[in-house]
Image (cartoon, rainbow over all chains, first blue to last red; front, side):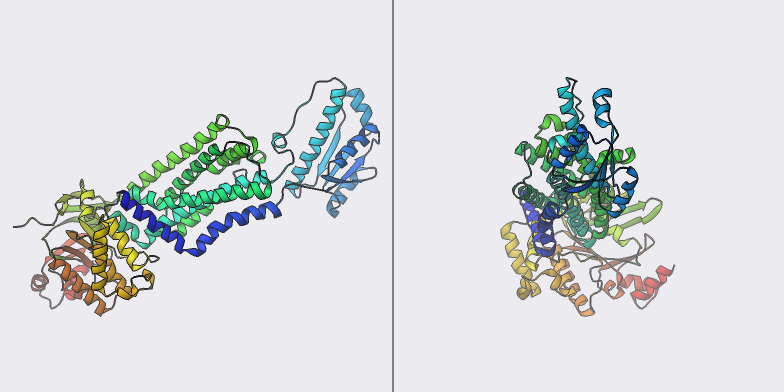
Length: 369
Length: 241
């Protein structure tokens, strides 16, 4: 039986190698994506134009303004007097955010221990607005903490955790795990569902099922080469991320490899499941794209932060394997945590894998009925 | 007398409330060429799928090559060849690779595969195209090759589901020569078709209408029974009810 299995895998590898166009796309896409995200699509903001409306003009407000301008993130421009011009400058695009100090800022801070300021961002570009707000808040909190220290008042630690692990706000930390997830999903789930559906469409599956080959051997033989392809792509993405974009790899390499394998298995089981419910390659591709890739991109936290989504979408995100895998990747690569922090995500992925394998086996049998 | 190679008694398949195959009964002897005739949707393919172990029957009993279709489908699969109405070679593999792959699937050893492959290519005259991708062969060649591959492991029975669809009359005739050869070599052939001239080539035929066998016998017997000159008229008579 092992010999037959070998012959099967060889045949499958030939299918892959002879479809040169697809192969080039499969190998080239991760490289193109990493480079594209790395150089073109940036989440970080440098030299953003900020308007300052200082109605206090005291030592404290000036000091804080200096700190903001020293950060390199912002280019400040002083705006005289009142707040009613803010909309105007936003419309003209002269600034992305306005920072307003209330009158008597220093006095209120020192005496009432409670001064307030306003951060107004142009949210027509919500991503940038969010980032700018985060930057400014971080700087202001720092400033506030320093003042607190001098005044012997207990610390106010209320930092964004993302900033903690990604102090320079490098976007590579976000896109490398995301791209890896999408590519692995594409190869392991979409390509396998298509290749199995192809055998059904062409009628060769019937011949194979009427042969002495065990059906599970047929499926394993078909997906095995894709594990190698997926691993190769994962290695490419990590290598590019580390060497070209200084992606950190703080955690254990062994654990990382193990988790990648687990995710490949989860995706393969999804791919096999999709192939059991689709009769043609086209259907398999549509289900993979719409039902799998799209939610994986939108609801995994790859591009859009889950925290800012409605509760319903956050709940739906829980059934998307990509969400858990991205958490695992960020955990291992950026935070350097081990399995003791990632066991929950790992169990979820393993559970999903087993579930889809079980459902596929059942579906496969029903189909043969 | 020999035990029948294929034996079916009241074999039935229901899909929900739809009865695709309704209590079909027949026995097929070793080396016999048995034709399954019927209009599209009459239940021919479902019948074949039950006998090859691809579908579990709803009720009735059937044995293929001595094995029960309900409990011993794995053993059946080792003893049969199958060619479906869809073209069953891999387009992106060469002639050689297709032969090697299917021979391997049926458990032939490397040595056997080598010998068989040589034999087969010489017989079909494919020496010049053995390293050509299957998709570049004309349909007639592909079908002859697919048939040869279906019997490469010398099965007891070969099932052919509309093997000659879309092929020109000369190639069809050549294809049937191959079926006669296989039958002479002791392989039992069960073939479905809706070409009535092909029905004449069969030793015995059964005509299916709406899942039931409405007529069964040698072509000559049927012509006498229905008092018709050719199979076509009999078929039209029966199918119209």
